[in-house]
Image (cartoon, rainbow over all chains, first blue to last red; front, side, top):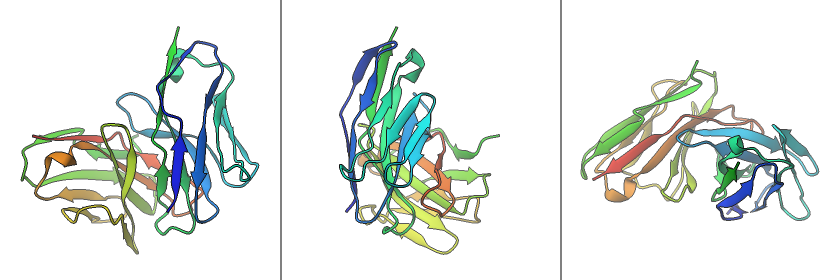
Length: 114
Length: 113
C-alpha cells in the first residue's frame, strides 16, 4: 500500500532560520503530493501541492519540489517566523486508489522561538 | 462563512454509549471524508463518500458508520464506544479530482471515559 514518511519532530528553530522538513513516499500509482499545516486547535489547511514530477509548489514563502527519482517532496522555507509554529503534514493522493483519499505522514511539529 | 463545519467540537461520553458527529460543507463539493487523528497526531482515513460510492478503510470497526442525508452532509455514527475510540475526528470535503485540495473541519475531540 501507499505510505508517506516524514522526519519526526519536534523541530525547534530560531526566528529567521532555514527550515527543511523531509518527506518521502511510496505509491502504487502516480500520486499528487501535498503539504498541509495544522495550527493549534484547528483543522488542516493546504499549504502547497504538486501534481507531477519536477513541479514546485509554493505558498507563504514555503516551497517543495516533486522529485520522482528520489520519491521525495521536502518542505523548505528560507526564513521562518514565530507564526509558522505548527504541525506540518506531508500527504499523497494516489489515482490507483478508489475514493480520492489522502495518505498522510506522521506529522512534524515545528517550534520557532523569537 | 465556514466551509466545513462539524459539531460538536468536544464530546465526552461513557464507554458503551452511541454517539454521532455531524458534518456539513457549503463548498459544493461532491466527495466527503472522515479522518481520525490519534494522540500522536497521526491521521488516518476512515471513509470516503460521494453520491455514488462509499469507500471504507478496512481497518475501521463496523461500529463506525457514515450517514449522508444529502451531498452537503456526512455524519459519523459510533456505536458501543470504547476507550480506544478517543481521538480527534476530522471531516473533510473535496471535488473528486485527486489533484484538488481537501478542506477540513476544525475537528471533534472525542473522549471516552
